Amino acid sequence: MSRLHAPLLAGARASLPLLLGLVPFGLVAGVAAVDAGLSPFQAVGLSVVVFAGASQLAVVDLLGRDASLAVVVLTATIINLRMSMYSASIAPHFADFRRRWRILCAYLLTDMSYALAIAEFTDGGERSGDGDTSDTDSDDPTVDSADPTHRRGYYLGAAVAMWLVWQAATVVGVVVGARIPDRWGVGFAVPLVFLALLVPDLTDRPRVLAALVGGSVAVAGAGWPLNLGLVGGALAGVVAGVVADGRVNA
Image (cartoon, one colour):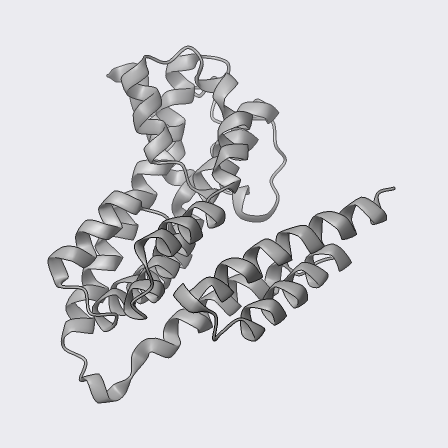
């Protein structure tokens, strides 16, 4: 356990700048789940089982609109497709772990835990610091990113901290949401959160085009059966983004 202590702390400390941004997102997820008609137990259970911010919110939104289970599952799968790329990228760094550790690491995988871990593993702790990873313990001589035990500790330190904060924020959101009168109508919080996540990521033409095409198709398909307009918009946005990116890089 002593060998894990330093990398666990390093990973937890590296996640601190990101945890503040996680709190309001988790609160919204909890409030939205209650607003969608889920019981507090169901809302917390969904958060624990799914543990995926964007897809969790999308699932809550669809459940609140009585979408079919197939559409809910398909939507969550599409949103989380990026996790397969993250997994393929980070899997070589987990190859030395025992199966139970790999399973736990896979469950805890998020955008932020992946970004922190892959930067630490690939840069070997020699980053000069940029963006959200500037406060990591990359200069800590006790953290050896080439050691599997240290890699595991660093990843779990960051990922578990994010899991704990997310679940705590969601529970608070569930408790608060259960006390908000229905007439207040807090359902607008979910689309606002998605817009807040989307806008900063529109940094080039392919991404802007993907957002415009995806959003337009989703709006045009608002009346489609089984809420398939959302799935159609997501697929159309992906295709538009891939095509545009191919032309830009051709």
